[in-house]
Structure formats: C-alpha cells, structure tokens
Length: 172
Image (cartoon, rainbow, N blue to C red; front, side):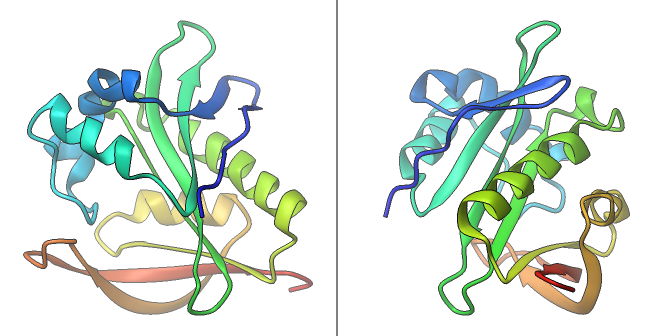
C-alpha cells in the first residue's frame, strides 16, 4: 500500500511529500555521520543512495520538512502502520545545523496530529537510542510516555543500540 502524504503546515515549517528531485538535499543529512549515529540505516555515500531510498518509500507517510523562512529542505520524517500490533510509529531526522531549535518537536507534533485525525489510532509508538536522550525529549513533548527499554539494530545488522520505547494510547 502506498500512502500519499498530504501537505501540512506548522508555524515555521511546511511538511510536504518528498520527490526524487530532493535527492541532493536529502543527502545533506542522510550522508552526515553526526545525523546518522543512531539511525538504523547507514549514512548515504552519495545522492544516488538518497535517490534509491526515495524510490523505496511505501507503506508509510513520509514528509520533507521545509523551513518557511528560507525554503530549506532540512529533514524528513514519517509515520508507519505497524502490521504486527496495529500501532503507528514514527521517525525523523534533521540536518545537523537545524538541531536544538525545536523543529523536531514542531514537525513530529504535526505528523502525530495528522495520524490521530485521519486514522484515530489506539496507539502511537517510537523509540530512540538510550545514548540519544534528545529524541526522548521530543517524544515526551509530543505527548508520548516512556513504556519500556529495548534494543534495535541497523538494517545491515552491524550495529545494535539499547533503546527506550515510548507510546501514546488513546484515552490514556
């Protein structure tokens, strides 16, 4: 199933669908080792890696985050339905020079708002590496609560991270 992400707007950002033409901009964060330290994918080696990733997007809503003030595509994020338990999970990443400015909380909050309005989920989940507490603060600011410890591995299996799992429950 291919999910079409609608254009969404926050005070400082426009969330829009990504296109293959975004590959060069995506490479600016997806190829940065600082941004990818705790991500399950390896840093992209070239814009061709970013292009391949853009072609692979399905079964999730995926947005590019555009800063209104200057039109910079500064990151991306998505919401995915988890077939194992029916919850929705999310992830995001931003260019390093856009960290610690509140953008992650702003755009993540908007993605969650969209999912809650469109799909009325029972649960929304996310996890972050224990060594990346800033992502945990984003999750808490977006209304999720700590649920448990866990771990996740990189897609190629070369790295494993201890994690903290967060969730939001309808009516909870």
